Length: 155
Image 1: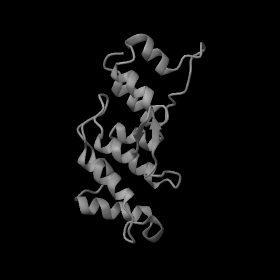
Image 2: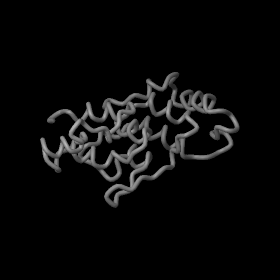
Image 3: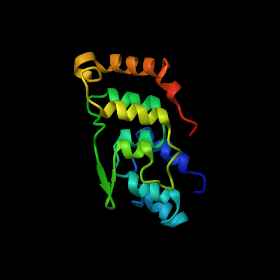
Image 4: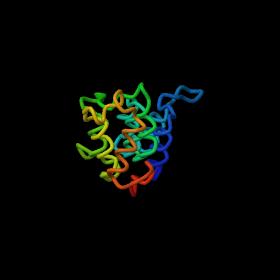
Protein backbone atom coordinates (compact mmCIF):
# COMPACT_ATOMS: atom_id res chain seq x y z
CA UNK A 1 0.00 0.00 0.00
CA UNK A 2 3.04 2.27 0.28
CA UNK A 3 2.80 5.02 -2.33
CA UNK A 4 -0.80 4.20 -3.20
CA UNK A 5 -2.28 7.31 -1.61
CA UNK A 6 -2.31 9.22 -4.92
CA UNK A 7 -4.06 6.31 -6.64
CA UNK A 8 -6.73 6.12 -3.92
CA UNK A 9 -7.21 9.90 -4.06
CA UNK A 10 -7.47 9.85 -7.87
CA UNK A 11 -10.08 7.09 -7.83
CA UNK A 12 -12.20 8.83 -5.21
CA UNK A 13 -11.80 12.23 -6.93
CA UNK A 14 -13.25 10.68 -10.08
CA UNK A 15 -16.36 9.25 -8.43
CA UNK A 16 -15.14 5.80 -7.39
CA UNK A 17 -16.97 4.65 -4.27
CA UNK A 18 -15.15 4.06 -1.00
CA UNK A 19 -18.14 1.93 0.04
CA UNK A 20 -17.70 -0.73 -2.67
CA UNK A 21 -16.86 -4.12 -1.20
CA UNK A 22 -15.38 -7.35 -2.51
CA UNK A 23 -17.16 -10.73 -2.42
CA UNK A 24 -16.22 -11.10 1.27
CA UNK A 25 -17.74 -7.72 2.15
CA UNK A 26 -14.36 -6.03 2.66
CA UNK A 27 -14.02 -2.38 1.59
CA UNK A 28 -10.84 -0.51 0.60
CA UNK A 29 -10.73 0.81 4.17
CA UNK A 30 -10.81 -2.75 5.57
CA UNK A 31 -7.99 -3.77 3.22
CA UNK A 32 -5.89 -0.76 4.17
CA UNK A 33 -6.30 -1.42 7.89
CA UNK A 34 -5.30 -5.06 7.43
CA UNK A 35 -2.32 -4.33 5.17
CA UNK A 36 -0.70 -1.19 6.60
CA UNK A 37 -2.49 -0.39 9.87
CA UNK A 38 -4.66 2.42 11.15
CA UNK A 39 -1.85 5.01 11.30
CA UNK A 40 -0.92 4.86 7.61
CA UNK A 41 -1.86 7.86 5.42
CA UNK A 42 -3.97 5.69 3.06
CA UNK A 43 -5.98 4.26 5.95
CA UNK A 44 -6.46 7.70 7.51
CA UNK A 45 -7.55 9.17 4.17
CA UNK A 46 -10.05 6.38 3.54
CA UNK A 47 -11.42 6.69 7.07
CA UNK A 48 -12.22 10.38 6.78
CA UNK A 49 -13.07 10.56 3.09
CA UNK A 50 -15.76 7.88 3.06
CA UNK A 51 -18.38 10.50 3.95
CA UNK A 52 -17.13 13.24 1.63
CA UNK A 53 -18.94 14.48 -1.44
CA UNK A 54 -17.29 14.46 -4.90
CA UNK A 55 -16.29 18.15 -4.63
CA UNK A 56 -14.37 17.42 -1.45
CA UNK A 57 -12.44 14.59 -3.12
CA UNK A 58 -11.58 16.79 -6.10
CA UNK A 59 -10.28 19.52 -3.78
CA UNK A 60 -8.25 17.09 -1.67
CA UNK A 61 -6.66 15.67 -4.84
CA UNK A 62 -6.09 19.19 -6.27
CA UNK A 63 -8.05 18.70 -9.52
CA UNK A 64 -9.06 22.22 -10.64
CA UNK A 65 -10.89 21.17 -13.81
CA UNK A 66 -12.98 18.63 -11.84
CA UNK A 67 -13.68 21.28 -9.18
CA UNK A 68 -14.98 23.70 -11.82
CA UNK A 69 -17.09 20.92 -13.38
CA UNK A 70 -18.64 20.10 -10.00
CA UNK A 71 -19.21 23.74 -9.11
CA UNK A 72 -21.11 24.15 -12.38
CA UNK A 73 -23.48 21.43 -11.21
CA UNK A 74 -26.65 22.63 -9.51
CA UNK A 75 -26.37 19.83 -6.96
CA UNK A 76 -22.96 20.88 -5.59
CA UNK A 77 -22.92 23.04 -2.46
CA UNK A 78 -19.47 24.60 -1.80
CA UNK A 79 -20.54 25.47 1.77
CA UNK A 80 -21.20 21.85 2.78
CA UNK A 81 -19.68 20.55 6.01
CA UNK A 82 -19.15 16.88 6.81
CA UNK A 83 -18.23 15.78 10.34
CA UNK A 84 -16.11 12.64 10.60
CA UNK A 85 -14.67 11.51 13.93
CA UNK A 86 -15.54 14.90 15.48
CA UNK A 87 -13.57 16.81 12.82
CA UNK A 88 -15.38 19.15 10.43
CA UNK A 89 -14.37 18.94 6.77
CA UNK A 90 -15.51 21.40 4.14
CA UNK A 91 -14.30 22.42 0.69
CA UNK A 92 -12.67 25.45 2.33
CA UNK A 93 -10.78 23.52 5.04
CA UNK A 94 -9.60 20.96 2.49
CA UNK A 95 -8.37 23.63 0.07
CA UNK A 96 -6.40 25.35 2.87
CA UNK A 97 -5.22 22.11 4.49
CA UNK A 98 -6.57 23.29 7.85
CA UNK A 99 -5.87 21.53 10.08
CA UNK A 100 -2.81 19.94 8.42
CA UNK A 101 -3.43 16.29 7.58
CA UNK A 102 -0.76 13.67 6.91
CA UNK A 103 -2.41 12.60 3.65
CA UNK A 104 -3.07 16.02 2.16
CA UNK A 105 -1.24 17.68 -0.71
CA UNK A 106 0.40 21.08 -0.48
CA UNK A 107 -1.91 24.07 -0.55
CA UNK A 108 -2.59 25.29 -4.09
CA UNK A 109 -3.28 29.05 -4.17
CA UNK A 110 -5.34 28.67 -7.37
CA UNK A 111 -7.68 26.14 -5.75
CA UNK A 112 -7.96 28.25 -2.59
CA UNK A 113 -9.03 31.19 -4.78
CA UNK A 114 -11.47 29.01 -6.71
CA UNK A 115 -13.15 27.72 -3.53
CA UNK A 116 -13.15 31.16 -1.90
CA UNK A 117 -14.78 32.61 -5.01
CA UNK A 118 -17.44 29.88 -4.97
CA UNK A 119 -18.23 30.65 -1.34
CA UNK A 120 -18.45 34.43 -1.64
CA UNK A 121 -21.80 35.79 -2.74
CA UNK A 122 -22.13 39.00 -4.65
CA UNK A 123 -24.29 40.15 -7.56
CA UNK A 124 -21.21 39.83 -9.79
CA UNK A 125 -20.37 36.27 -8.77
CA UNK A 126 -23.84 34.85 -8.25
CA UNK A 127 -24.67 32.23 -10.86
CA UNK A 128 -28.35 33.16 -11.00
CA UNK A 129 -27.47 36.66 -12.20
CA UNK A 130 -24.67 35.99 -14.71
CA UNK A 131 -24.65 32.24 -15.14
CA UNK A 132 -21.79 30.09 -13.94
CA UNK A 133 -19.96 30.07 -17.29
CA UNK A 134 -19.70 33.85 -17.21
CA UNK A 135 -18.55 33.79 -13.57
CA UNK A 136 -15.82 31.26 -14.43
CA UNK A 137 -14.75 33.31 -17.44
CA UNK A 138 -14.48 36.42 -15.26
CA UNK A 139 -12.59 34.48 -12.62
CA UNK A 140 -10.02 33.12 -15.06
CA UNK A 141 -9.62 36.50 -16.75
CA UNK A 142 -8.95 37.97 -13.30
CA UNK A 143 -6.32 35.28 -12.73
CA UNK A 144 -4.80 35.91 -16.13
CA UNK A 145 -5.63 32.40 -17.34
CA UNK A 146 -7.94 31.07 -19.99
CA UNK A 147 -8.70 27.56 -18.79
CA UNK A 148 -9.29 25.82 -15.48
CA UNK A 149 -6.39 23.48 -16.11
CA UNK A 150 -4.05 26.48 -16.02
CA UNK A 151 -4.83 26.80 -12.30
CA UNK A 152 -3.23 23.37 -11.80
CA UNK A 153 -1.02 22.80 -8.79
CA UNK A 154 2.24 20.97 -8.56
CA UNK A 155 0.56 18.18 -6.60
